[in-house]
Every structure is written in structure tokens, then in C-alpha cells.
Length: 229
Image (tube, rainbow, N blue to C red; front, top):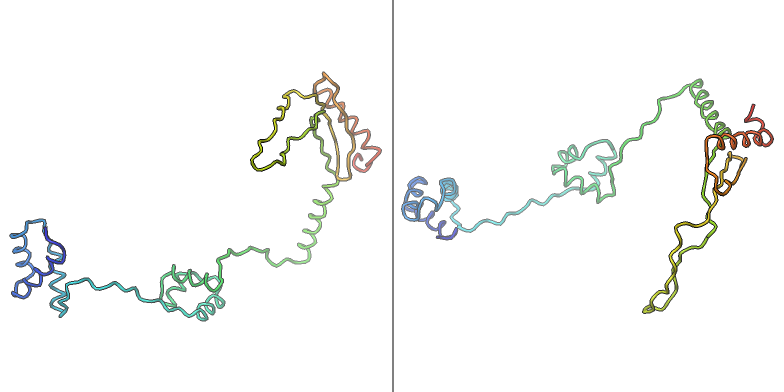
């Protein structure tokens, strides 16, 4: 099997004999087989020879250097901040990717617009102020109730300061069934209103929960009567 360079020598030889590309292809396939070269390759090299270029080596592929003035780029985005990199690329005669890369070099980043309300009149502004004020005052009328188990064992698992090669000391694994007690707390924005502890052996039922709400309501009458009325 001949190398690419050897085939090119044969192309030039056939060209020098004033053979056409078709004749050259037929001669090469007769000598080296049907899978040696294709007509497109032979025709391309014959066109190259006719142009006066008989160099058989590939010409180095040179990527045209992109010259972009950053001051021009900066002026474009300042003139129209909503322009696209495709539009900028067409104006400075470069690809969108190159334009984006140079935009980053001059410290530009793409940020989405922020929508703002349309121009409001006095009535609309006052209405918004009233609604917001009511929403804020609603926070003072909220009452929250929650329960939490409190463990009697408040020990913590912490690390040990030891030498670099010293093994840590053993620590007994805490029990899964610690003694604990449930506390129920009701509070508002001004502080705790009512709390109670669940007695040992008791469970929370609908009746007991309603009773706690009644207790909380009675205390609320004394601490924050405005919320009751």
C-alpha cells in the first residue's frame, strides 16, 4: 500500500503526461487496485496543479487572527446593553463565541432584566401601602403552638484532643430509650403565652389538646386581650 505522499507523486506524474483526472484515476486503479484512491482526490490535486501550485505537501492551516478593539466593543454594549453576541459578532466581523470571550475580557457579564411595576398614581400607591401595613399587623395576631420532647440526658458526643498517633478512647453508645418529657408551648410575636408538660404515661389526644387550647385562650385574655376581641 502506497503512502499519501507517494500517491501525490503519481498524481503529478500523470498531470505532467497531460492526462486528465479520469485517465489518471483509471491508470492508478489498474496498477494499485480499485480501493487505492477516489476521483475526488485526483480531481482536487489536478486543479491545484493547474493553478501553478505543484507543492506536494499540505499547506499549514492558519487561522486568521481575530483583531477586536475592546474600546469599540465597549462602545457597542454601552450603546445597546440588550444587544446579542450574534449581533456584536456581525458588527466586528467575528464569531459569536469570540465576541462573548472578548466581552468577558473587558468585564462584561450577561444579566437578565428586572421587571418593575408601571408608573403608579397616588391612589395605587396608597392602596399598596394599606395592604402592606395590614399584612405586617397580621404577624401580631398569629399564635403558634408546637410540641417537643425534652430528654433528661443532655450529654453530647464530642471529639477528643489527642496526640496524632493516639487512638481515641471508647465512649458508651447512648441508650435509645432515654427518659423524656413532652412540652407543649404556645407563643405569639410578643413571647410565650402558655406551656405545659405531658404527664408520664399519658398521650396526646383530641380532648387533651382542646383542653390546652382552652388554657391558652384564658391566659391570652389576660396577656393580650386585643387578640381575643
